[in-house]
Image (tube, rainbow, N blue to C red; front, side):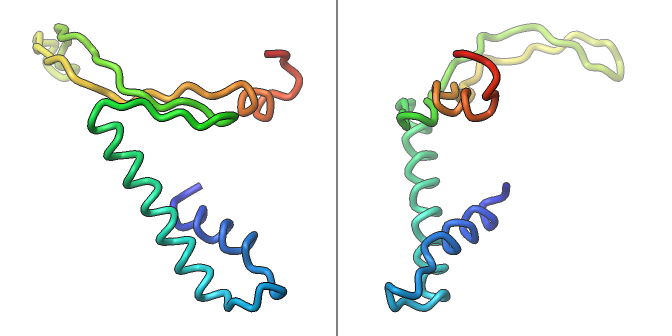
Length: 104
């Protein structure tokens, strides 16, 4: 699912004629909300903070140590520096929805 598909699905679920709001206004609100949420998550991870969404999962930043790799074309050794990478660990509820037959 892409970000635009997520925005569309959210707008469809919130589009309720009883609320008296137009679908276009709802779509803009959903787009702003999704963009702000993703930006806040990106900034938090950039600062090395941990994000926990109960029932969904946890986002964190892990550090990979430096290592020696190989250039696949030439076979030459290449030093790969240490780097920080985002990591996602799914929560129990998400794992159960993805694999309903497995007990977690």
